[in-house]
Length: 164
Length: 164
Image (cartoon, rainbow over all chains, first blue to last red):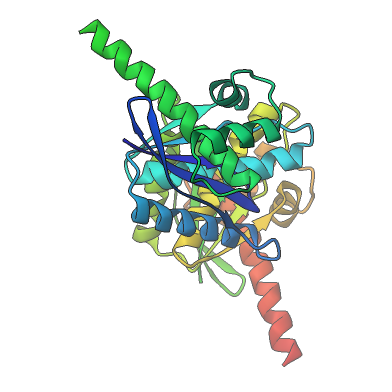
């Protein structure tokens, strides 16, 4: 089972691909796609969408997971995040992938064990779980979402198997 | 010059196509695309994106215009609007169209003459300018954005012509 985790943002969207076989997780690739702040909004969205398309075609994940956007107190930041998030959700869904969504707290809880872990703790645990993963906060958040999805997907399948 | 106006929303996105030849405007078509509130967010975005794709392929507009999203006081509504708006901006831009954005007040001002007109006034003026346009608030807002873009596109071209 190959999983794509996504951490949406208009300027930087982090992505990470892992493989999950039962409880065993393997790092495949990760990185960040960017859009140019000097371009018009619609042009920036096309840039994000196309770069995500390249990653989807290259790594062919089976499912995707996106971190739920933090609702900012600044409405115009919230709107910008929303716009990026729309395109980030669309790219894998348009290719027929299931796209799961997880709250930031659930992601932290499933990676670190507590819901209010800080960025550094998440990064450290991601590195421990996926020793081959590169650094960088954005990419580590994206891998954390993929790990969270792997855990939940495994529990879902075990629950389904037990119910049969 | 064929123009597509778009009024984004997650549940309903209004669209309207007009033709502009100098100051003469002609109504071509208008309508509303929907997404099913019972579906997952990513699935709803795919539905909006694909329906807009059909409209773009059918009417082949030269340019598009989108109303700037009203920033709601409720952050989660703002986020939803943003998500829909991302997909609505992406659909024409992905096909290489210029996508202009206008504030709601500028749209009203360019259609009714004042920036604080109400919905009924906008609808009445849209019907007067485009006698063949069908009814409905969502579609009338989308046609209003297209009319606003026609006015601004014409002034831009006149200014460019005068500068030569």
